[in-house]
Length: 280
Image 1 (cartoon, rainbow, N blue to C red):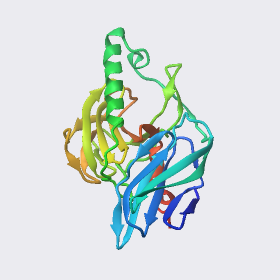
Image 2: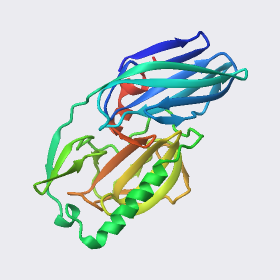
Image 3: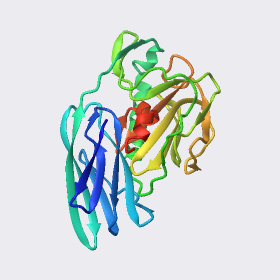
Image 4: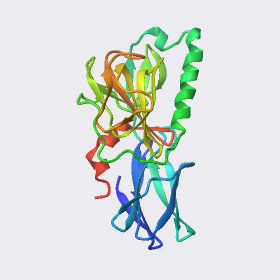
């Protein structure tokens, strides 16, 4: 992802990648020497008002955005709405979304984790709605900062976006990144944030959902034990719990999911050196 600066009327600098793959997160940096009273970024029919910080006399905001892995390719518009000296100023640029390549994976799990019994369907639907409601919140604060903290030292296993076959049935795409983590391995927060959900889910098992601010969330799943509570503020690297094999699993590991403005994105990108250094 090559970053291309866009001079917005010589007043606001907007730096964003020229292209990004489907299902991938990306950064946008906005800066101005003028007094920035309000800022809104619009992308893919979603909106975020990013936290603005001062670096000397310069106002800056870093925004984490993403593309849905099912959204398809093509040009999309990134729009920035800035209020300076009481006037609204709009700047836009196009970002090309390219189709990412996805692999396949075949797994064997308990039959009830492929075809849940009727008695569990209401629970599964309730959990889906609970998670969707939490992810719909776009907090005005930005708690996260670069670089992101790797949640566990274990090897990355199943990658994001895989077409998965469970027990001979094509069930779903893999909407996270799996790490090797033997039973009881400490699991760390990838960034600072507020814990918004701590619960046991049918598929995800014992999980912790963290709001990192400005529409960015991470979820650590399949834990054997959780060590934080809803409402807690956590720091990057803080232990959230211990790895386990709860939910739909083939063994103990960490499933890490990342969400940006409601879209599930590839967490692996967040730990790549090129991602953090995109503006250098």
